[in-house]
Image (cartoon, rainbow, N blue to C red; front, side, top):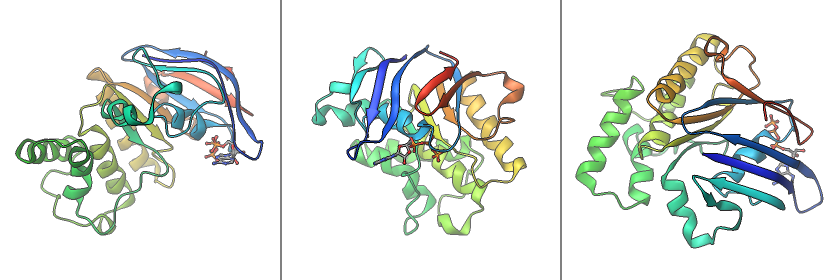
Length: 219
Ligand SMILES: Nc1ncnc2c1ncn2[C@@H]1O[C@H](COP(=O)(O)OP(=O)(O)OP(=O)(O)O)[C@@H](O)[C@H]1O
């Protein structure tokens, strides 16, 4: 469950990216976040894993107040979250397998089981047997699928993605959307931002719309 209660975010310098945003996302929902460039979508998503902290208001993730979470507790919060944010680029000097393994290494997962989980995650996104390849040798759509495998390898209950289909051809974008839909059907709460009004249209998702830091639809 994700709860935003009257959340505001003002960056140092004074720019107000979010102004009093309130909504609730229940366990197992598929929610699409849209809004024009600069509306505050990335900022909203970054508050969930405590990459950014709100200036006012409260963010609750599975009952935990992450707005005031001590820094040492943040890694525990993120264990339960699958993240595909703008800053989570693939490491180009590591293989596909190593990239997907990274969250498990960080959380100190036993290596044998970690390797099995990585293989299963790659299989899940249609890249079984491609682990030895390097990211730059893959197409844009395949690279995004590696990023999805990395996001789900910890088996998170919540998956958050910021513009995961930007720069992709429509056919690839639909494949990525179908993957998110399949995780959602398996019980994962999914929150995805996109500029693309057609993405997920067939799934009739709940839509949250931001304009200039305010939620204008979907709360
Ligand atoms: N670290 C930061 N410091 C200062 N201002 C910031 C910072 N990050 C974002 N902003 C500003 O906050 C506003 C909202 O940005 P945000 O990236 O959340 O919007 P967005 O809806 O994701 O836009 P886009 O679709 O272009 O990615 C923008 O005006 C942006 O310039």
